[in-house]
Length: 120
Image (spheres, rainbow, N blue to C red):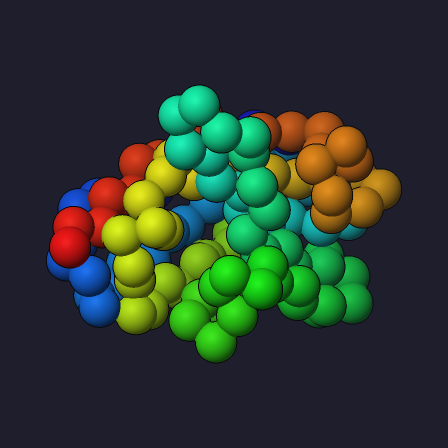
């Protein structure tokens, strides 16, 4: 499975961005598809994920109420709508596919990452 991310950029605090991640290849194997993020010098952290067959959505507490993950079934694409962005949301955001679960240890495929920078 290959992942192509887009949509990162620079935004002021309080603004919005939408990330996209398109999957290609053997997408029938996907169980969860979502996003992690990483700040230099820190561990990668879970952001949000979308269950592929059941439509379950799971969010990190730090983004609940501000971020929304959605899926376009026909395009095998997930979107992360990020509203009310804060400087602490600044990170490289990685699209991720889990074949057995959504936690980092279950991730089988990673995108290259897209930078999101929120200025104060």
